[in-house]
Length: 326
Image (cartoon, rainbow, N blue to C red; front, side):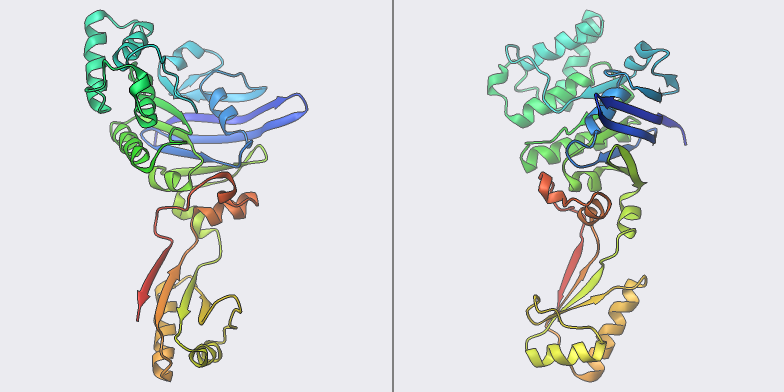
């Protein structure tokens, strides 16, 4: 596995406030690494250091095998950055914004025209290419912003909360673009306020809290670290609930109306089979069964002590529960 982004013992303070307290990370080529954390955890600071916009107090950064401190220009030649806010010129058309970026990248006239045309097509902006940005939606502006990042064909891209404020359709469009880039071998480091976004896109997630990376792993690996998986059994009568509670030796929860929460063991399928068999053998009528497994919201809360919903994040779109009517 080749490493596209590597950081060791990164530290950064502003006055008396320590923002990064010795973080390490490695991002494989052609993958998406999502950096999650509460507001103010240092995600944007980390991105600014990795993309050479901000010097670290100490530590090392290597991008594509190049030391960022020793040769920042070589690093900048192979990276792109899309910040939290669309960096487009509202007085220009979409096409003019892209041509401006092409000139800044020192592309020749013919190469610039070809590259701009390709990007307008790729980002579904061809019809709006010569319209003023005042007529662009938020999603169109965000797509244009990412297209400008890609003018120089970077192999490493930093996306700092790229879909904040977008409607669901625009977010899905951006996700599709990210997947297409990664399939072409581009490496992406993503910070996001949306847990479902990290679950959908990232092969690896790092959770940043208190200036440190407190956990790293695939989405499934992180979910397995958090307890809380259970089977929720729903009955039609209080009598059936009481019988099931006694049979399964699980106390009924006063907050659950005619429902019983049975913890899942490591053998989730075996737990469900055993519960259903015991209820069936005892003639206890079950109305509905739901299987609940931890999602990234649970991971986030367990690792940071803060609920993800407090900072506007959405529940993971990966199925965290499945319901069956019996």
